[in-house]
Length: 165
Image (tube, rainbow, N blue to C red):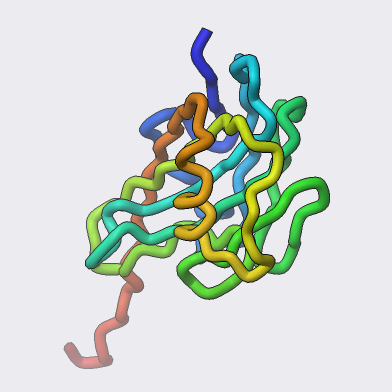
């Protein structure tokens, strides 16, 4: 069976709850996975926004996740560095997860959470490695990957009219 990735927070193609965004608690959603391929020595979970203005924006790279784990609990943010795996510096310049935060005027953005099964147990990266560096170093070791895609749109703040308008 192919590698599977799910979340109890949102379904494939569904809306990501505000709790997991910059407008909420800004912590990672919970994830579960199954059918990890034989030969997997570690896992890499990334989150990016291909709809960001200009180029893909990287929100998270959690790596060196033990291959026998079957998920991650919610709650990994820039302030909570993980035990048991490593996290890269995201495009906000912070370590760990920073949630969806598209410009208020934009249409909904799609966020790709991608789980990669790797044939390497530990990626040879510096503690200050960025998501892009981690992803680049991991690519030769990818055995299989799966994506869970959610969307999010920030609400436009209502500006009250002046009295008399």
